[in-house]
Length: 300
Ligand code: F3S
Figure 1 (cartoon, protein in one colour):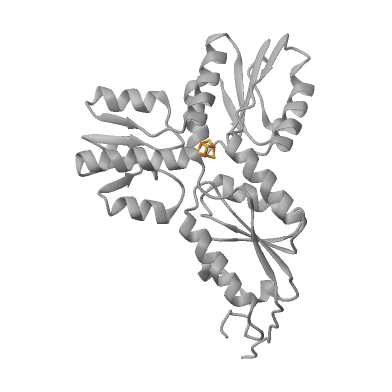
Figure 2 (cartoon, protein in one colour):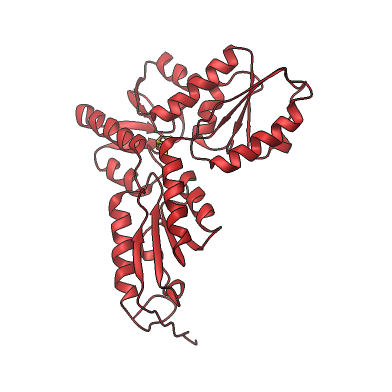
């Protein structure tokens, strides 16, 4: 086997001015930790946040993530991305105590969807229909509500007179604006009233802005976070538009070959990525960027 020699020059490593845990994630973890401290053990409806390291830490405190509401009894915590009201009502009917760790920004989107539906609007959500947050908001959004990332795929039995448009909290503002204008072009033939509620959360917007600023002055960007985290993937997608970008879950994923010829390395992290993971990636980068020579697997 030929081992490709990789030469790494000295490089600066800079973190984005806003990165990692957002307030909704911190709050959700705190709510669940407090409940676990009070009760000894509890279940959560899916992972509290999309990060395995956080899930493992909570598991050590007696917190177990379950996939289906039907599997739980006793006490269950809702995750930061919330749940559909029908699921919560079903749990309560079965006598399950519900601890609500839903992020207030997700709660705001649920409330907006509910108010639009109650006022007779058909709701369209700009987001991944399979994501738990979007499934939860859809539950509040009334009959015929739909979620998609593609405006061309939106269809109704009859195009409504009143149309409401929301976004998944972790989407990108520019993409949401494009989606809205594409949907408007189709809806305005029938619609007499269109309401757009910007439910992209502040933390997402700040992290995306900071990541882009850093990416513009970097020649390599590493985005730290789980591949199941929508906002982390979104950060990686944005950064890749302006610099070479790789998503990593931890320092073990860094490949030495990425650093070849790079002098400015930027680091950002998704809203569900713990500080320790970011710290470990930065420490490994600093170690590698001071090193010269090695093989493509990262061995030195
Ligand atoms: Fe909430 Fe936004 Fe964080 S929706 S969980 S503050 S990324």
